[in-house]
Image 1 (spheres, rainbow, N blue to C red):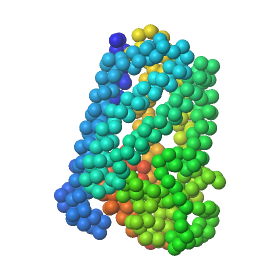
Image 2: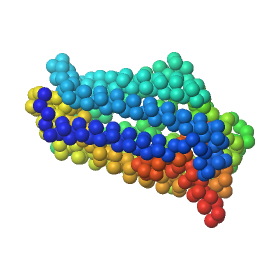
Image 3: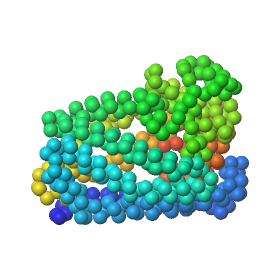
Length: 417
């Protein structure tokens, strides 16, 4: 195998990504303490804080081992030219380049998920079990894994098949056609997410009549937000951790509450959470986030179109034909795009954190500052969340501000009101 310049650039990117992820993890570990920090008094007690620190250490160790194994596998694949060998073998068996691409991605995705399976199993049935979070059975875990694999294969096959198809039709403008089709597909998936994707994993039932439903419906009227219904997600069959989310847009928008949320929070606190979710909608965060994603996808496809004809991309992943390869070119470009993707993700996280403050501010405007603070404290403490992450980790990785940052902002917002 000939190691060209692009090959070594890809290797450097893979290694640096691993090193950077572990630097961030080490910075978080440096903030750990055996003594309850003063700012967390009233959120954790001494015993729960010690338990949280143990939980953080366990997850950090697992992350280190998993990332190290995945990096070593990736390097082994690169240095042995395995991807090039696989593409050559599939091309010799199938005449259709689209079939070759779909078979290629199916094999690669399946093997990568197989490698990650022991880590996911250990996380669920050792770490989450030890700290009292896991409620999933092993049959449910295996079913989720299989459904995840099939769903990933379908989405990846559609995306890759569209790109290869239009590349064959028009190499110069394939990116524009692929961008249009994939945008239509992704918007459709988002629009019908609750009807198509969620039922594959969870049961959704309308919230029953009662004090909570009345409070949520009243909030909808006060905020001029049409609530056709609020749905409960049976998250308790997998974990004790609570969550709530808003999905869709237009007539398909839906508020979903995990049933564990009802066990951990009172009516006012849950209503405050809904006020926060409505705040996202009222501030157009859902639609602007979608448009931002569409623009990034277009930029990535356009940039890829400038390099896909280069045989050096395929050669970097082990192709011995000396000709360009669409599938190998796409994967090689994806690896080279990694640093740009990190920077785009960083910008996205900055925007997301700003959006969270705005949604919190919306809830505070309707008098829910204190209930939201109490609700966030309960969710964070019961999930053993790390409430003192390193500032650089927050800046680089966090899509949400920390609990303390949100609390301080809500207190200030409440004071101004």
